Image 1 (tube, rainbow, N blue to C red):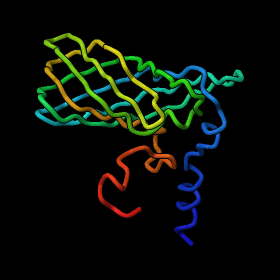
Image 2 (cartoon, rainbow, N blue to C red):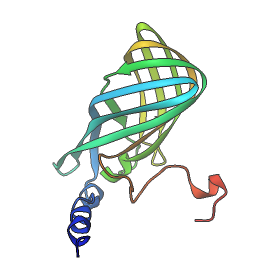
Image 3 (cartoon, helix red, strand yellow):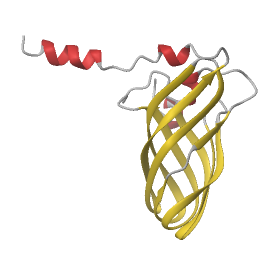
Image 4 (cartoon, rainbow, N blue to C red):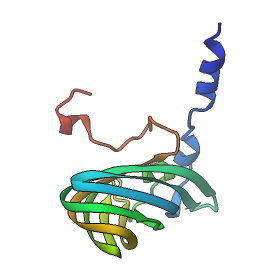
Length: 172
């Protein structure tokens, strides 16, 4: 019986994405972002932020998110950024849960103490992160980049848009 309480706590802390699935998005941004990147020909990016969503019917969601990703290419990068990520929405209506998952595309950067980091990333629902941001540190990058956005603390997104099983040659 000593395992019952920890199990109840674990189940009670599981993220409920139904609130996100119910909101049709009018505007969305990830604010208060703190990103750190370390790479040499390939490497990682990690950080946190807050997903702010305005719904078509007046709903407002504020959801803490975790950001993790990486890059491959011509890279030397040790930088720190605090950008707001402006999410560009597609023509068709999407729900807030479709803002989560993996964004992929290109990244360019030139930073010597301070400089510019540019991302052109999109997820499978055609939501984009296409902007330039101030970065601090040292970095030169021309790379393929991916950035995974998930609800903070949730390791198992129901609608994860990461690498598809078919792309990895694995049976679903």
